[in-house]
Image 1 (cartoon, rainbow, N blue to C red):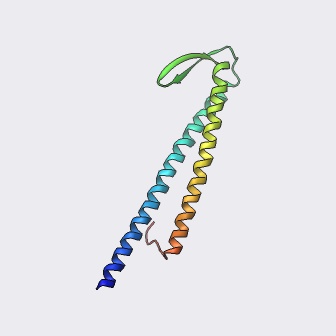
Image 2: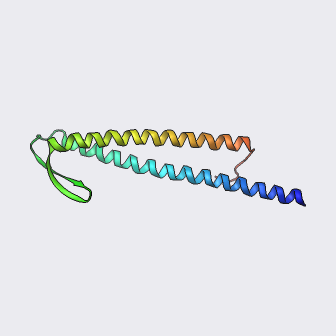
Length: 117
């Protein structure tokens, strides 16, 4: 009976660890999706502004305040933000893959077989 309790406890711990891995992967996937969406928005705005004359006025939302600028002023900042988002996205994807590998290694180590994914 003590062996059955120990086994049930071990199984419960493994189940909790598995749930933690899955939740972490899901959170990372959501963050990756959000950053991808922002990156696409930046790309679209950059493609729209590049052919315009540099002295043309445009508006930019900064901390909830709409400010008037010129295309010349906005393009470099927008490009910097876009590059930063790409770097963040690359790092998040690496982190996701690393987490996925850790989970697979953990499953092999503990002989875990998932019945329903």
